[in-house]
Figure 1 (cartoon, helix red, strand yellow):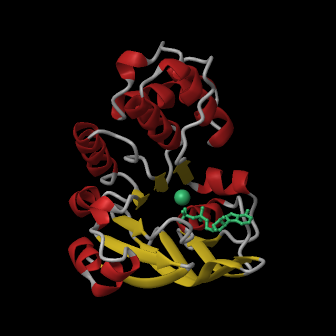
Figure 2: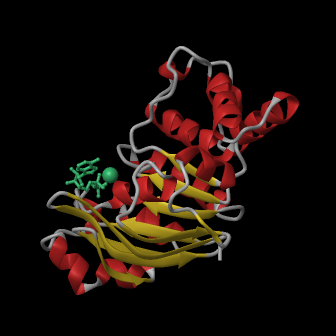
Figure 3: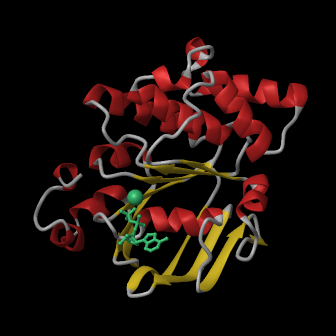
Length: 241
Ligand SMILES: Nc1ncnc2c1ncn2[C@@H]1O[C@H](COP(=O)(O)OP(=O)(O)O)[C@@H](O)[C@H]1O
Ligand SMILES: [Mg+2]
């Protein structure tokens, strides 16, 4: 098992973002995460990466307990995150952004960092744009850059937060193909509202609501479930984004 989460609890005052959440994930698997806005999806990533500390619970990566470790230690142990809102260094090139991630995030240096950065650019489909200022990239390429920054450090677990959000249908398809390719090398958790994207990539889908795991099932079964229909108030998941 790459990741084993159990009994995870976190509240901000009255707001419960994790209520006894547990799941596990193996190498080469993709877990989709869905739930209405405010359900605690990004907060789950904050807890996994160490941006936030849980009130209770355990997060094991390759058997090592992560709770209590700071974010930079977890990054070195192999957790990488593509943020919901890409925030590259706009004035640096695409390559420099990925190099910075390989260096400061993953602790690589010199030739190893440079090679890793170029490999990440190639894999995420950005090689031709390596010298472009990151701020000049269109949205799909900014999302690709988030992914490239994540994989530049050779993570074990790749966390994708709505990397297909805001893309055109054709671009969503490109992202689906990228994530399908990536999941051969990493355990992936993909938070996404776009049902058909998760159906194409995820092995299982976990449904969060007010920080509670309502169910975990195959993508089709999860999205067609009565609970999901209900929490999205009868709106198909595709239209609920
Ligand atoms: N650091 C924080 N302090 C207080 N409230 C927070 C914090 N982080 C998230 N929240 C609240 O927790 C809830 C879940 O947020 P989030 O995990 O971002 O939801 P989403 O499922 O849309 O990604 C929201 O109501 C949000 O305002
Ligand atoms: Mg979110």
